[in-house]
Image (cartoon, rainbow, N blue to C red; front, side, top):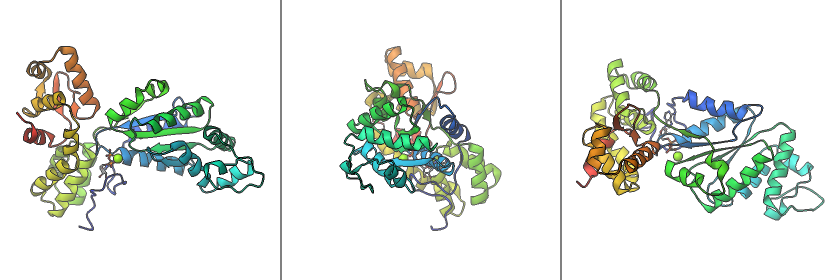
Length: 345
Ligand SMILES: Nc1ncnc2c1ncn2[C@@H]1O[C@H](COP(=O)(O)OP(=O)(O)O)[C@@H](O)[C@H]1O
Ligand SMILES: [Mg+2]
């Protein structure tokens, strides 16, 4: 359907976008401070929780504020890509050329006469950034979907040095909790270990209901009950809206398609990546929709300390909600059905 106001596309800012005011301003204010206390943030959350969209919207806002934004790929030669992209950013090559920064050694074309190629990439990037610093420019680097690769470790190490030299460079990364966690726990990357993590949780339910009320023509009551079904999960907000729109607003008729979509695009992958014990724990909760911690503990037959390790990890992965004291619930909408259908009991 072409004029559907909702989208099934990952990673692109959707027409129906709900702001995350508190989390956006946390990053924007920290990074924009005269003497920033942090130059790095990691954004984490399950697939479909809006990491890419969130990161892009922060980048847009800083760009509007005259920041230089460089989007890098987490695989490949990240530092080299940074040098090349900085050099090729509109208006910057002249600054670097005028300063006589010769990047020809790295295969980056430069327009300077005297040839004195820099051969160390770290030095090159440092020189470039110091020129930008003199012009009071700030550089935001974004990297989507990081994991603990050799390239990322190397880049993080180089970034650490740039920050230590007080260069105006900032890093915003996204990743699944398990991937970010492994990278953060790398031995020589202690500064990453301390880097703040933002967990992307539910979107505002009232705003979701506003959207459904207006665009699907639902009563306030129906809009709110559909919004609650999404549990604020960004992908489900779009998927429920999309299929409901296709059914002319009959949202109950749209549920089977919406659930199937979530299962095929996200839940299957999530399920495959879980360990046996994690699956058992989720199954135990899914059977009853929500369950007392005591009862899960008893059913799981695990030593108490191990139980809390698994519980905490599932909470950090964004699959388990432990916000109500003494009770555990699944975070994602219709995931209990999925789990019940797939658990081998
Ligand atoms: N703030 C938001 N408001 C509305 N929809 C959103 C928002 N953030 C993400 N979405 C929607 O959720 C889906 C997943 O977003 P995406 O950023 O690709 O997630 P992730 O990168 O975490 O997998 C997309 O369809 C996107 O349109
Ligand atoms: Mg993404």
